[in-house]
Length: 122
Image (cartoon, rainbow, N blue to C red; front, side, top):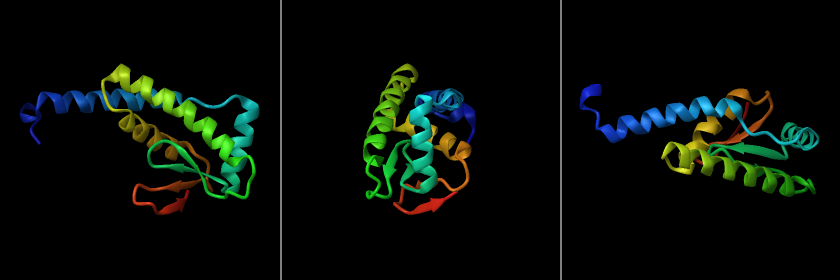
């Protein structure tokens, strides 16, 4: 596509999303003690990352997994909404940018759910 023929709103959206990608490097993580618990549950496969930048429970038999997922998703939602407001884009776009960064940085063995509902392990 010829950049001079790209609609201005599209070029601005691309630039905003590129700026978000650089912001995603500073992912909001949980305090150390809770982060250890989150990382342990993720490593066990009880919690999975999703394509939209949120997490989900994979194994409901783990008692505290849902409460951790709720807390992490609440923190991520607040961050995505704040970044979206700053950049003038939708919060779901921010979540998807963060999801790509999370996938790239997650340790091997982490489970992910794709947009089509399929799951895979890194």
